[in-house]
Amino acid sequence: MCNKDEEQLNDELKNAAPEVESEADAPAEEISVEDQLASAKEELEKAQKEYLFLMAEFDNFRKRTLKEKADLIKNGGEKAMRELLPVVDDFERALGALEQSADIESLKDGVMLIYNKFVKYLESQQVKAMESTGMDFDADVYEAVTTFPAPEESMKGKVIDTVQKGYTINDKVLRHAKVVVGQ
Image (tube, rainbow, N blue to C red; front, side):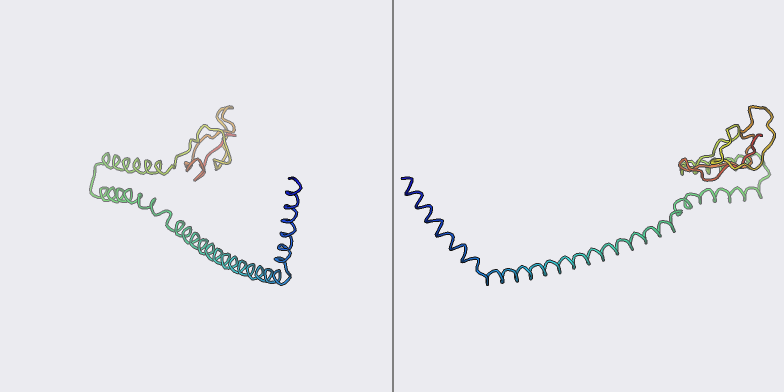
């Protein structure tokens, strides 16, 4: 029984081999190569169109973001200025009251209210006054206006007096404090 199965298998293999050879004729290969070339050209054209589309889309994105950035820079202070207008209004009322009132104490109180309102606004914008008098001199934070002989040995290299306050915004120096340093 084994011999019959082997013979039958050999016959099937012989019959299959000519079919493979007949399918692989030379003219069929040339047609498939031409088809492959045409297909490759179509894919290349499609890829080039997609590339050009993406390049145009990226260029539009770049132009749009540049315009938005320019608008932000141009109008970035708009909110800050809008919130300062009530302080300006208060100052105008105070100036009007100066001309009409003789009560100095009430004028002082009014100006202090305006000052406190303004300081509160600055704090809401993360602007804080720097401590300087009595601190060690740091050239990154303070600007030395002059040096003065230190009244005590322990005050050498320290800030003796503050001529103009310094301010920080988000822990970055907004304005350096102008100080007198002990020598």
